[in-house]
Length: 170
Image (cartoon, rainbow, N blue to C red):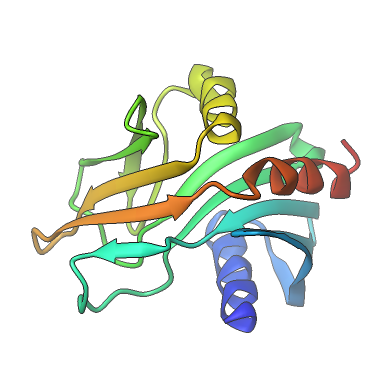
């Protein structure tokens, strides 16, 4: 599974415009249900706090890798950029909802199989909610009309967020 996460991170870097070197993503730490990865790209170092859902619904649906990532790109002065990779093509012009502890909700805009926070002014609020929370629920809709719900544990999120920042010199 760790090789699959590293390979997915390399593919995500390539999709985001960064050219990843072969085998560039390396897991450097694990904190409960979250991990820290570092990737050396042609554009510099990128550090990620990454988790996969503990539960997905519906079960048995054919999906690729499902990840929630917080990325740090020091060369672009980007810190804790939230992104979600749902493992399937999302419905065009749809949104993905993220709810933390049935309390705070955030809306992500979709593109292909990924989603990014719709209001960049909420970055800090999202990070604070993740650090305080116990559980995060992500809901999306596929191009085929399938509604999915992915439940993430937030155990270890704070340590992974701090670890990714530290790995990228922050």
